[in-house]
Amino acid sequence: MKAIHISLLSAALLVSASAFAQKVRILDGNMDALKGVTKLNVQFDYSKMGVGKFETEEEYLSKKKDDYNKKEAGKGDEWVKSWKADRKNRFEPQFKELFAKHSDINIGEYPNEKYTLIFKTTYTEPGYNVYVTRKNAEIDGEAWIVETANPGTPLARISVQNCPGRTFGGNDYDTGTRIQESYAVAGKGLGKFIDKEVK
Image 1 (cartoon, rainbow, N blue to C red):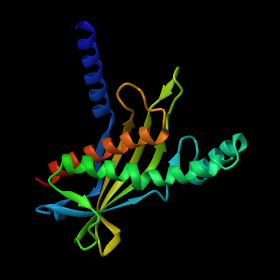
Image 2 (image 1 turned 180 degrees about the vertical axis):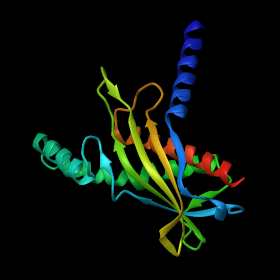
Image 3 (image 1 turned 120 degrees about the vertical axis):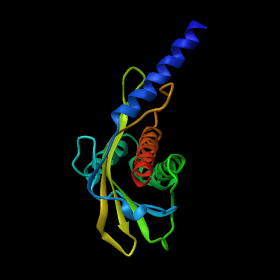
Image 4 (image 1 turned 180 degrees about the horizontal axis):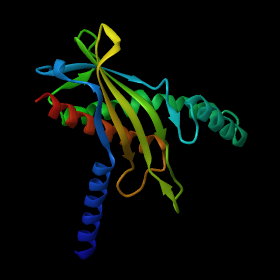
């Protein structure tokens, strides 16, 4: 019984630490336009993203691809495909699901809606888990609220920083699993923040 209590306490502390690590704040503009809005178009942008110690995603992918291909021909090329596929298959659905759970605004592919939320990932720390040692994944980003017809001019820019990603129990040996949790944290935090701002 005591072991169960300690495990539950550890899990609660982990959730608490994750919540306090994340920072969401308005950089400029405001969200007055979203008052009364129930649906938002959403887009994701990874075009200016650093990864780990690399300034650009291209540098990171090139290094990883070469390393994997040296170990096994073609493995690096498959890894790059998987890395990019995770966006549509794992990260974006997780972000949208958690945003919707914590906001009265539904986000999705709604190109006919007046407003769009563009989530721009600016940094990804993939983390690692090699049994004896680990480092959590983490993402930083900016959320732009724009008129769908005028995406280059944000009505508001929101900073979303320090979104940690790991799973309970530590069975997140796959990079995509760890990063997926970072997008869940980002979606939840941003959803709660916007919901509070527009009420």
